Structure formats: structure tokens, C-alpha cells
Image (tube, rainbow over all chains, first blue to last red; front, side):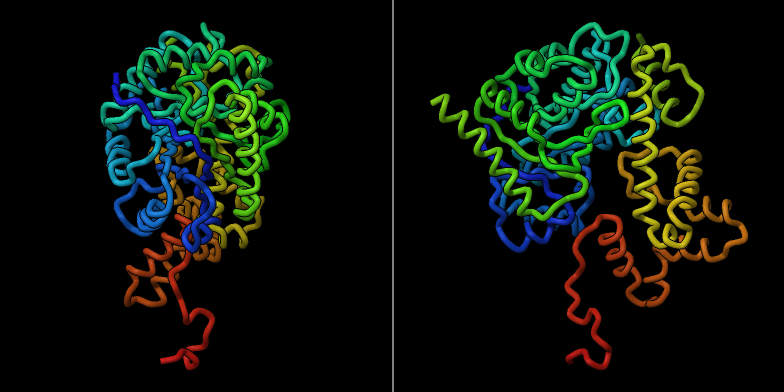
Length: 280
Length: 154
């Protein structure tokens, strides 16, 4: 188990997306940290790294990955891990995170966050993979709860029970995506409050907020609109349980001007501050 | 359950190979399986569309998506980066449109046009093409952009 605990960073950030590069480079955006997709910068030098370096001079950076495939039955990709380690050493990020999912099997890469069954077998495998990744990265990871669109008949525990056991066995922390909880709750018919009560609150180091869309049969985690009222309501409940942790808003499609996202971030600040005042 | 067997079947479901996802999920999961199947195809098609914007304009979106679908079926992605996923799409198009020289030239010209026109400094052109078109980075500082040659201050 990795001994170093992840320091809390009780602030508010945004994801770095291409349409906003200039905004972030030409002025100091009023954000406390910036989250970047690790894979976009896992290359040797060049302009992406140059841009990231300039951003890093202005803001703390969180590295958020989508391709580690922590749930792959055939193990982690060592070359991927080595590249990520190089980036981590260079950036000295606030957090290094990826998702509780799998993306790759037998040389095939789906480029999607695919669901895992919540079984003892999957738990053993995910824990072994997290321990290996933390060993290579020489730091604990944050693992994010995914949005899911199906459940497996073999499931022997809930997602929050799985997260509890995973954190206890690996020393990893959680990136709690409040929108993902909401999307999965609607899709699978559980109470999102039961989920919030079930996650190990003291392990949460970061919260993601986002919007979703109504698909034909399911809610889909599209990140293409503002954070909707039920997700804000769930965020308030999450703040009450986990206390002050880093919060950021994810927007990946129909990306509005930075000012719109900064206004949304002010909403997160207001909700979290209200809760912190109540707690004081 | 064998996790490895389930993941191989799931990959089979995404890539339209007959598999047995029914062994792992019940009927309620069908809608969800469709969501993952659709998302997989759309993500790769969007990736090709972004890389071959001009070819898509020439063909029209519907025909382009048919071609993209053929490419995706024949070439499931292997690496963790999609940066090279468009490699070979020009050959898929040449196969689908053997008599349409325009299609071939549009798909080939995407990367090579800027380098072909100016052979000197072609490496740098290509780096900029990759930076701007694939990685979506901001353009280089170009004070002479849109300015006639004889109006460029010396």
C-alpha cells in the first residue's frame, strides 16, 4: 500500500479544453486549478507540452486519464504507465486520476469507459492493477466512479461497496463524479442518496460536476450542457458528507465561452461555501 | 464469471462479431449494450470526420459515414491514442470509390497538400499541420496571414 496520503486541496477548477487555450495562455483565468486529460500530453515535448508548461506556471494542474484501463483482465499497459510516469514527474500534479472501468482487452482498444461487473474477481483484479500503477507512479491515485448503462447478472455487491473495498485495499482515493452517480442512479433505479451515504467520505479528494442528456432508454453522460438542477442538489448533499474538497466542472462538447463556465464554477463555490459556513 | 471472457465478448459485441454477451447480462441490459455499441462507432466516426473534413464535404455526410463505418469495421483501434486512427482511411475510400479520383485526392491531400506545395521546410509544415489539425492547438504567430506577398513589410 502506498503510504503517502493525498493532501486535500479545497478549491475550484476547470478542465483545459482546446477552445480555451488562448484564454488560459493570454491571461490568468480565475480558477484555482486546471485539470487536463493526461493522454493529450503524453508525448515527448512539442507544442502540447509547451502549452502545458505555460499553464503549469500559472496554475496547479490535476492529471485526469481515460486510457489506463484499470479493469483490464489482461493487466496494465506498461508502456502507457511509463509515459504517464514521465508526465507526472514533469508536471508534479495535484492529483493523478482515472476511471473505474476498462477500455482495452487482447490488443483491442474501445476508447470508451466500459463497465465492470462488481464481483470479488473484478475487485481482486482492479486492486492488483491499482497497486501496480501506484507503484510505478510512486503516488496514490484517485479513481473515479463511472456512468454505466448496464449491470451484470454476476454482480455480488453495489458500486459503493466495491469502492469501499477498493480504497481500503489499495490506499487509493476517490474522484467522486456527482453527475455519474445521478446518471447511473436513474439508469439502474437506485437512490443516489444511498450511494452518497455508502461511499467512504474521508477518501474523496476531488468532485466532478457535469451535464447529461436523455437518450432513448437511458440517461447518457454527454458533458455537453450546463450542470442541471438535480446534479447541483446532489452536489450540495455530497459537500455535506465529504467536506471541503477540490471541485471541477467537465465540459467536453458544445463548449461555451470560458466566462460561462466560470459563472457555473461560481455556482459550485456558492453551494460549497454555504455548506462550509453551515459546518463552521 | 471469467472477467477476461466477458471482456472479449464485450469487445466482440462492439465490433459486430457474433458473441455471447447474453451469458453476462439479462434482457434489461439490451438498451445499455446498444448505448455502448453506438458510442464506440460514433467516437471513431467523429475522429475520422475531424481528420478528413474536406473529404466529408466532398462526399456529403451520409456517404462519408458509410465509408467511416466500413473503415471502423475493418480496422478496430489498438493503441491508447486515436492520433493515428485515420491512417489507411484513404485506402478504404479508394476501395469504396474506385472510379472517383476526387475522393482519393481529397483524402490524400489532407496531410500532404501543405507539404507538397512548398517542398522546402516541409517538416515544419507537417508539424504545424499535426499541431493544428490533430491536436487542435492554436496557430503559430503569422503576421503575414491573409496579407498579399507584396504588402508584407520588410
